[in-house]
Length: 350
Image 1: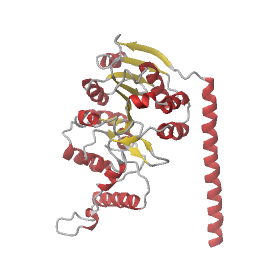
Image 2 (image 1 turned 30 degrees about the horizontal axis):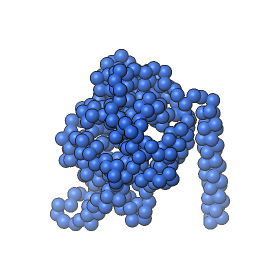
Image 3 (image 1 turned 135 degrees about the vertical axis):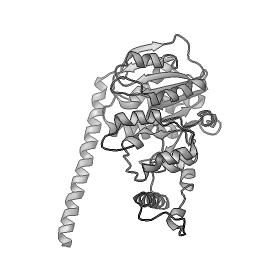
Image 4 (image 1 turned 180 degrees about the vertical axis):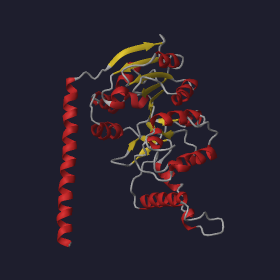
């Protein structure tokens, strides 16, 4: 029996190694093929005719039908109300007239591009259009539509961006793969804009049609390049602070008010809590916007990841009461989120 197990483990290890090599080969092939394409994939541009101000947001969007879903408009409105000129870049290759009509009052520019290079290809095109210079730009945000929100006032979060404390800020940070700021919200100031690292990284971004390449070389690579060239990076909601908020008491509390431990909801909650406590104590990195979603809500993080509620790739098992937790921390109307989930959920309930 032990001999058979050894043989099985050897075979499984063989296929794991070759599968990784296969995917790695595909990633490199996609990268080399990207040199046959222009980095600029913009096919249509609209502007309001005014020069961009000192606070700019490059905002990346995708919708297969070329629509701008209702959940997204409060985010754009909040950016506009906080004095940011929005360069809206869609990877949809089209926008409906309804979408254009909704966007024009909020945006300084709208760029429609082919969906090549995922978010980072769109970011590069948006940054090229914005042409943010250190002498004329106080704040540059690079954002995408992967979140619902803001669930609360966005101004306090923006006010915490302090370029005397760090040269580049993310909303959150991750240690998965290697340390990096999560790319759905990146803020840089004059020092980063003037740095060699910032320009070298964005010149390296190609319209690669391979997600593994984009994650490893661009999602993680952006922070790594900035650090390599001496820029300091920080998160507005640091990983260590979120981990410190994990409360183990539901696992040990034993009194008359303890919920029925045969309740599946209670079991799931405790199972997930056991997972995050184990990960934290064994220094296993977690995705804060997924596995630490409760802690994010406790600190009134203004967003919740759309992917978490739609696909749940991290397989978080205690999401069923996310609405109750959200109600406890925010004054929230779920209508726009519900509308989007009705369109995108498959074989799941919200």
